[in-house]
Length: 275
Image (tube, rainbow, N blue to C red; front, side, top):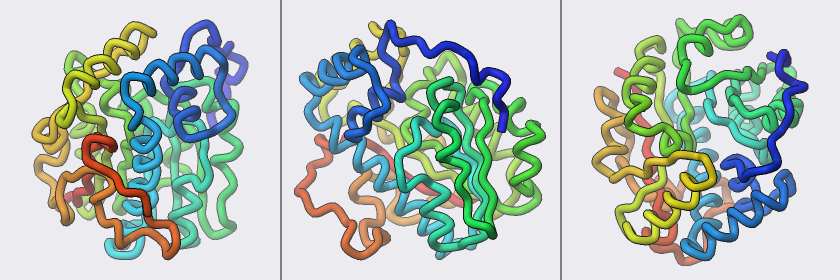
């Protein structure tokens, strides 16, 4: 675990996307400034709470499907965010106890809670690396990663609600393709991404709120989200709104029971396998 920046101050003077997301999920790891910004978003887009919940639920189902149906035993989760149980490794290790998971994030607040991400099964391995998605080369060559993941064997790249924080100017497709190029055949991409497709006016307000708070965002259309899967074999049902991606894969008794509309969730999701 990289801890060279563990003492870095956490900026509580302005809202942070990870802490706002924690608020949407009903967590306690946020500050008043984050709550105020999150409630401003919620006033413009009341569906944000359902969107956040469905994002987590998609991650859980995608992880289970990759473990049970595609033999994946390794995950690289970039943009981890503040830990919310069950974390990805807990879901994976419930299915395959020897699963290995590397979490990566560049937020000092996530670093503060990273111990939660390290509670692996005895058979498996987990670690946390402080790294930035905009510098994937540094992440992929980190010694900590090599201690946990075998890059000669399939790895699932998990990018949940991350890439809408990477604008076109930062070359998001180049970043994702660069990581996938390093991973062997049989690896996977599991990705979720907020979209303005169903309510452009509302999502422009959300964009303005985040950007005004110092966090540039770029929410994308289904066509643009599908571009992340170019060259991959998309699993059924393709790139769909979060709650419509393999709801049957949820553990018994945990499936969404509330009636959700696509506009409420406004989250494109998909999983692809590298041929």
